[in-house]
Structure formats: C-alpha cells, structure tokens
Image 1 (spheres, rainbow, N blue to C red):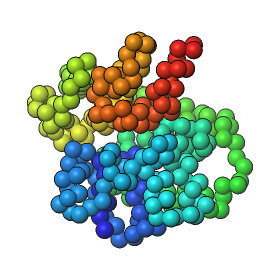
Image 2: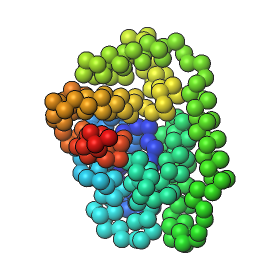
Image 3: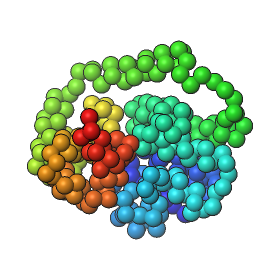
Length: 280
C-alpha cells in the first residue's frame, strides 16, 4: 500500500511515515509530492493521502495526523503515545506539551535546511524516530536537566548558526520574489510556484529547491501561510472585522482551515488570540 503527502516534510510528515513503516505496513511506499499534485498522483497510484486538508488522515482539533493514525489503527503502545505528545508539541509550536518537542522541531528544521531530498530526509528521520521510540520505551523516566546551561548554550549556537546562514548574500531574485509574494498577500491572490518561476525567469525546480534557504527555512506553501497569518493578526486589531471576514481576506478557503493554520502558528485559536490581545 502506498501513502502520499505534500513535499518538504519536517515533523508530522516524517513521524507518520515512520509509524506506517514500523507498525502498520513495513513494505509501504511513501510518496512526497507538490501539494497541488497530491490528489492527482494519489488517484494514479491508488495511494492514501495524509497530513493535508480534506482527507481522512489529517489534523483534528488540537491533534496531529500522527494522533489520528494511532486512533485509527488502535495503536495503544504507551511509548507511541509519548511520542505523539512530542510530535504534537513540535508540529503545532506548543512546546509546553512536552519538553522534548522543542528539540525535535530544532533537529528536523536543521535537517530540512540541510537536506533537500525528501526521501533522504525520511531515511535519516527513520533512524531518529527509532531512537526516540527506544527512549519512550526505556529511558523516559531518567531525569535530566531540560534547561541546563549546556543545552541552552547549544540551542543558542544552533539558532545563531541558522540566522547566519539566512543572512548570507541572497541571489537577486529573492528581492523580486519577496515583492511578488507581498503583492499576493496584499491583494488576496495566489500564484503557483511555477508561475512565479516564469515571472522570475528561473527554473521552477531550482526555485522550489532553493526557496527555503532564503525564506526563514520554510517551503513556499509554509511561507505563504505564515505571511497570511501575520496579516490576519494585523486585521484582528480592528474589532469591526469578523474572524470569518479575516479568513476570507487572508486567502483561506473557510473558517475551519483558517483556525487550524492559525493555531498551528500561534498555539491558540483566533478567537482566543483576539480576546487576549484586547485585554492587554
């Protein structure tokens, strides 16, 4: 059985394939594809789509796709449930859920930055999750300072390294692309990466491969969603604009999609965020 999801995996889209291959179907083939091609390829290959909107295997409420896999396939292993909490915290930026969530996100953000081949990234991710599973089975009770001076220093150095990488001289096309993306956000329009590459007169495959290096270590879709959420936060300061209208004005297909993406970026839903911001 084949499974398919969107390209450029980081957290959930590495964790779920690991779960599939280790506990559901060892011979499963994992396919990574551009989001706009997932359903077409799924139909051609009879693959099951996951961790994208409007499919069975996806996020529900506060839970990630990994959580749904556990429920759907009745995987009640306590170690897997510990991993699920870590994955959920990392994937939704809720590092308060488990102290290991921040580390998991840092590791896979760094790997995704260094490795552009999704299958190679998955291969390495399988080893990492094997190690995490062993920890969740046998070592999770061992006490260790979560915020000791060494860990804090290493994390600081890691983030400074990423920032230095992002500050390296950028190609000329990045400035033009930033303007084009901002125009999309301002006018509530959407252009595909292929269309943008044509406008910039560069290869679409090159643009897809290089994009994250110069745009906050995010792929194109993730960066667009981040910019839309930033615009939504600006609009929330105007009490006269409803959250439904804000969802529309920021390019989301519906209120539920807006709420899910907003919570993924901010850790809380839009109504709670707005309520707290007005209390300040």
